[in-house]
Length: 278
Image (cartoon, rainbow, N blue to C red):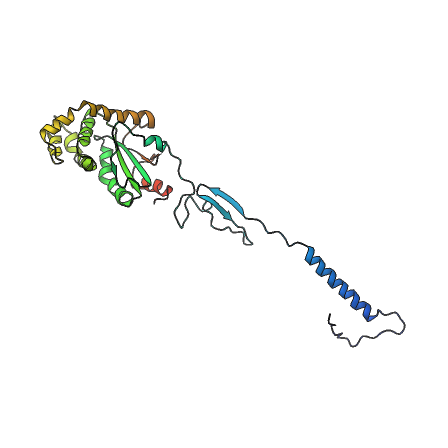
């Protein structure tokens, strides 16, 4: 250990014996230094605060609290979705079990869009329902552009007729080729005021429109006389009424989540965003 110079001058030993010998001072200083080293070596450093873990439906995220008191990115503290991926922290709870909703019914489902799309939209509608016609004319085109054409969702239309005329038009839709089903539905909704409103029989106007889809008068009449088809369409409605609690049309389920605040594009956006498909 090097000696620190004495700024007051060379150290002098008192001849009277009352002073402390220089060698003794050095020994004491060395002992103190060694003691300090031993203490620092065996004394553990302060234990840092461990990170806390929060578990969500998408996995486990870590919140690391440092000196600033801020935490690292945790989707549960910044909203329902992560900013980077849009993945929901907690997917919405279905109102209807998707397995039950998708069980085969009396009539086969006709899918609009990619059958393997991650989100399934099921629509229950009546062909004589003005709100259903409004949806197909004003809202469905935007839903189709944003979600169906992009492969994020598929749409399944199911019959929920509110009167006998709606049953008849639904029968006609089921009598066309499956590839023309959704186009026929759309055409009938767009022309709903022509055949559903007014006095007299709606059959002449329905026949006129149906011929554009390939019907003849004979095939038109045979379709409307198909008792088994009529019973199947009524059975689709009965199953939906009893199992899914439908009270009006149109009614929509998105992966089993029922739209409760209307059927505008904003409502579709909310649920699609919740499923990470916005």
